[in-house]
Structure formats: C-alpha cells, structure tokens
Amino acid sequence: MLYYFVSKSHPAEPMTKLKASPRIYLAGPEVFFPNALRQGAEKKRLCAQYGFEGVYPLDNVVEGAERLAPQELARRISHANEGLMRSCDLLIANCTPFRSVSMDVGTAFEIGFMQALGRPVLGYSNTPADYAERVRAAARASSAAWDAESHAADIEDFGLAENLMIAIAITDTSGVFVTEEVPSHRMLSDLTGFRRCLERAQQLTRDPVFSS
Image (tube, rainbow, N blue to C red; front, top):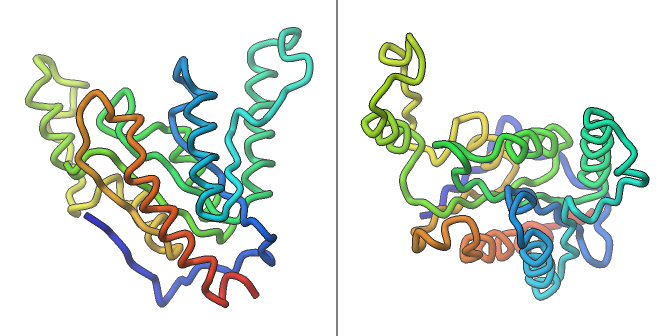
C-alpha cells in the first residue's frame, strides 16, 4: 500500500542545490541492534545503487566518548545527528513499530526535524496494520490498563500508518509512506519498503523544483 499526497497549501520548500549524489539521512531503530553497522552498510549500498549517498547516524564519531558523562555524551550525539541531517537533502525513515505500537521516538523526532527544514521525508513500515488497528490489538492483549484513564481515552483513527503528525509530515513533503507485509522475523530488517522509498526519491530529485 502506498500513501502519497502533495500539499497544495503547504508545499515542500526546495532543497539546496543538489550535489552529484544527493545525501539521504537513514533514520530508524537499526542503530540499537547488535548488527547496526552491517544494517547501515546495506542501506548505504542500496542508496549508492540508486545514485544517492546514504548517511547513517553511526557515521558520527564522538571524540573522547568514553570519558564523557552519560548526559554530555547524549547531548553530543544529539547535536551530531542534527548536523548530519542539516547536511542531507532527504530523509528515509524506518517507521516500523519498535518497542510499542508506534515507531521509534527518536526517528519520529528526526522526521519532524527534516520536515521543519523543508526537506522531503519518506517513510516505510513493515506492517500493513494501521495505527488504530495496532492500538486496539494491544489494548485487547493487555490484561491491565496502561493507565488509570486509558479505557476512556480516544484512539486516533484516520486510517494512517502512524500518528497523524508523523504520517502527514511525510506525505506533505512530497514524500511517500510505504507499508509492507513481511515475515515476523524480518519485521525490522526487511528492506522492500526502503527500496520503494529510494525509487520515489529518484523521482523527486529528477524534478526541477528540487534540483534548481
């Protein structure tokens, strides 16, 4: 399933003049996995096949990290990632649910950051179930309420793959939100949706509005 929408009232701002190989920031929870570097390398390899330079959060090196207090290290990582995003022309986000019914929250922030810069944001999720379906399923499976008021709380239901602020941030920047159904053991590693985002990114960067 492909969600695609170009806002006429709030079109994406043009990117800076594209380089020979447009840079794509690769956002997602892969950075937390034991094979994080291998997954990043595979995504960067695919980017190169499509004519892009993949930029992975773990490309950053924080000097003297072992000597820093945890909060200071976190601050430097955050600032370094923001610097990488500012250097990129587009973002592709893995929005597959991670540790909850929703996507990784750090990835959600990165989507908002790039959207605020006026850069195209593309996203994919390796589940066909929309946000409301996942919330209801989790509520049924839970033997206890998540909190004292959860039984009375509204469930956002617009038929979107994620919370509307995420889904619309993606589609309104001339991006795509791809959903795929994949085997459960490949939920967070399957790259079919990622490839579809790369195909759309090629179309975007060929459009004169993004390259002038």
